[in-house]
Amino acid sequence: MNCVMTKHARKALEEREILIEWMERALSAPELILPDSEDTAIERYFRRIPEFGDRS
Image (tube, rainbow, N blue to C red; front, side):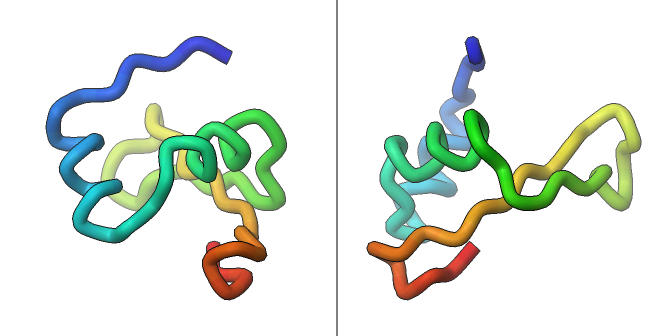
């Protein structure tokens, strides 16, 4: 999957202490996909991350 990360996205991951590898894992094999509540053209991908206390 190809994706382009904005500066805002990189900053958000850093602030939340989310590794890019975890984001890539969620994008390539999501456990849940939901539409964004404000923009239905945007999908939100979720996956539990064992190394992060199984948080998604």
